[in-house]
Image 1 (cartoon, rainbow, N blue to C red):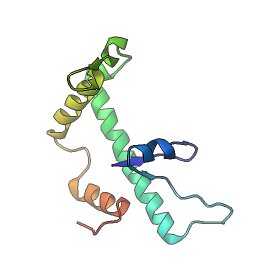
Image 2: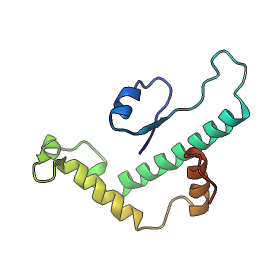
Image 3: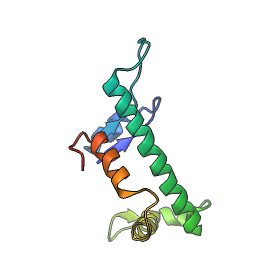
Image 4: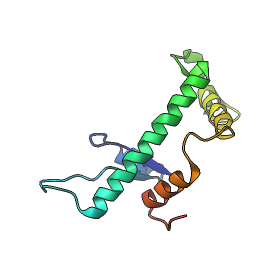
Length: 122
């Protein structure tokens, strides 16, 4: 799994405990500008972040249950599956959204993911 975070969020230990990879934008750390590789990585992360925020916006617009605060009862854990009811609701909303037309063209998404995960281009 991959977790995207911004500067200032101290989540490295939490992310590592779930055996996930943390991606942060590059820092200049006293340099006047970023290395070309770091600059491209940071641009890709920013682009990916914009698309993620768009998808979250689509989810919130489409499903009224995600538009406001939910009852504390939804945070109860379903003992059979060891997951909260809210997690189940969000998962179903995401699955339904995934079968709809994409908010991001596939080739663009593929190129961004390949750069972020440092794999070969699609």
